[in-house]
Amino acid sequence: MQQRKLGTSGLEVSAIGYGAMGLSHGYGPATDRRQATALVRAAAERGVTLFDTAQIYGFENEELLGEALEPLRGQVVIATKFGFEVGRADRQQILNSRPEHIRQVTEGSLARLRVEAIDLYYQHRVDPSVPIEDVAGTIKELIAEGKVKHFGLSEAGAATIRRAHAVQPLSAIAERGRIQILSRGVSRECA
View 1: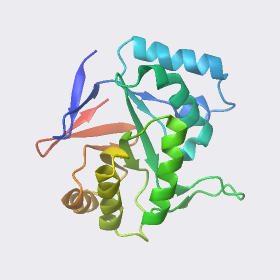
View 2: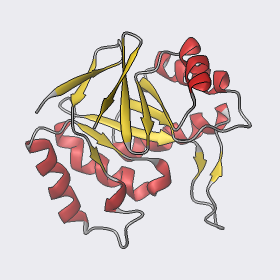
View 3: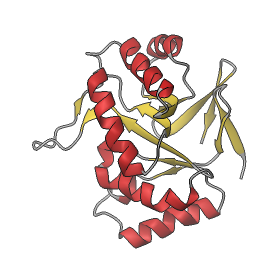
View 4: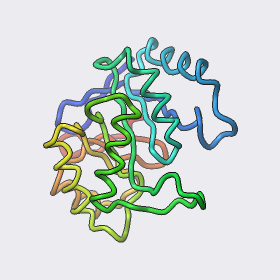
């Protein structure tokens, strides 16, 4: 499997990643847990090293990925995303990237993923009510604390990307299910 370096930080992942959303969210009933675990591990056996989930996919998605990949830590990269209020009774998807909310949901993701640090942490959608500099600053602090290793943005415009990158260098940008890798200031697509 071909490998790609994300950003300038040395994070290396497989050219093909595994998006876990469909295991428990978005495409009908959740996959049987044993089958889902077998599927995730089969992807890893075939050379996939980048596994992607998100809080908005339901906490069980992060839990499933954390459990399935626990024996493979050190061999794989887990990416997850923040930026929504998850678990609302009205099931609405409300953006929330306030620094205190990011810190709160990070602790939950760490526990569900069974990791000490999130390998790649994306803001799922830009929250127009929170300056991107505040979001990037919070991630910078979480990196300094050892809770996050790399920062990414999803569905962000060029000006937002530049402003965030000025505070905390970005390793990846996701758009419509594809990751743009940042390499020496050049963006390349990673399928």
